[in-house]
Length: 114
Image 1 (cartoon, helix red, strand yellow):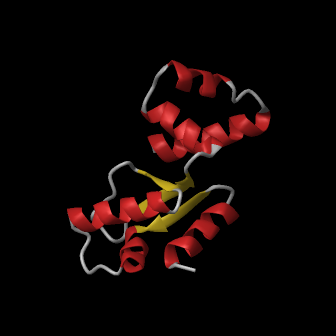
Image 2: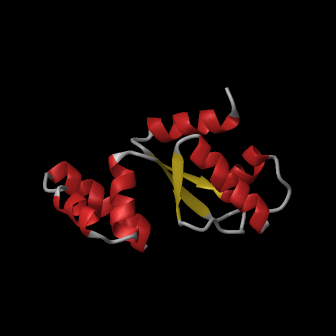
Image 3: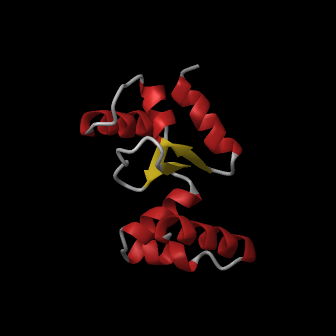
């Protein structure tokens, strides 16, 4: 099992959303500095293991936190709906009418909007 597979397990174990710092992602990638090419490689590695990240552009500071989520999950649908508004996304946002979904949406808003 690769380090990114283990990381995916952590995301799954945390309800589909997991916080990690850039220093950890840099180590998993086996890189020295968080230059643009390393950050792009991390994004590709995460995507190849079925994960997305917020913010959309990974930061260059090793201490900055990143939220990881599972691609194709309800969280991913909400993240996409918030960051790339369209009619389909509007429907996804409207569908979060249950109290559990509203709590998840509140948490996502805090993550995305700060």
